[in-house]
Image 1 (cartoon, helix red, strand yellow):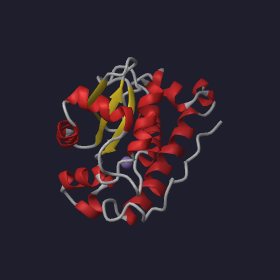
Image 2: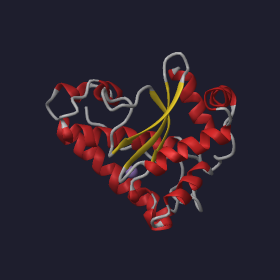
Image 3: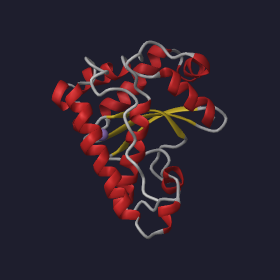
Image 4: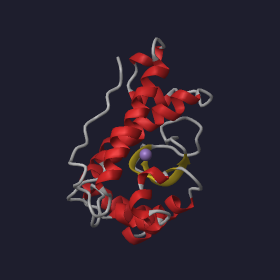
Length: 202
Ligand code: MN
């Protein structure tokens, strides 16, 4: 059963001025679509064809580069659209807010550490906030389209937040200013969705 490109949960212009319309259109309609199509081609007629994307990534052989790159790209972008919202930003709420305070000291300390992970990822990749079974939070980053669900990437748990730091995610609006893009992301984080993901996977 082929994976489907999900619809954006909001209009592509609705994250302006933090994420621009053209970037959203190309990022979803071209990049995410290509990961989806290439993943489907890579798993055709294999046992992976009948797995969920989470199952597929959890049993992934990291030497299988087409599935690693495109399966990661498929999952990562599915997550990315949902953890942003036109009504997002501000401070975390609910149980996740308390967990962030107890894990990192404060929301500001969390923001600094997460931003540092996103800033120091050399080249293309992602920064993550993950939850482990038991509720422990972890900040980490991965190169390319790797993610914490893949075994052996040095980053574990289930993603609560993921930030795409590939240049295709920000270059049209921010050029080389990745720090400004990271700040823009914090203005659109969908904390309700992040809290749901935290509660469902702790
Ligand atoms: Mn991307």
